[in-house]
Length: 76
Image (cartoon, rainbow, N blue to C red; front, side, top):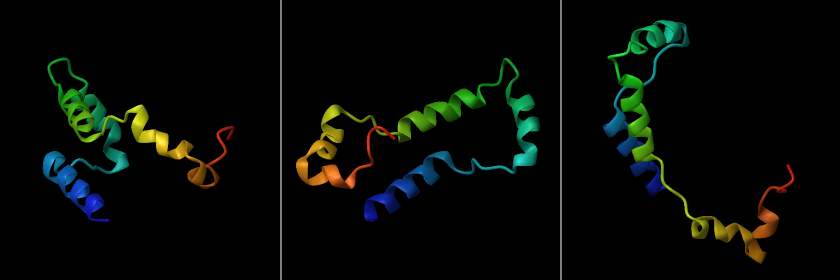
């Protein structure tokens, strides 16, 4: 639980205010789609920094016998 809290705080401190009302979406797209504006690129780089890179070893625990019944059916 503490890990989640720290990750949420880190995301807020790095990204700050990133939400906006949906009725402003088209205006923001027009504003930030200008060739010289790299706001989308900056936000994408922030997201990449916050998203962990998982390895095969990170996901291997789901294949252990004791965890197989806890997982969703892989055919779903």
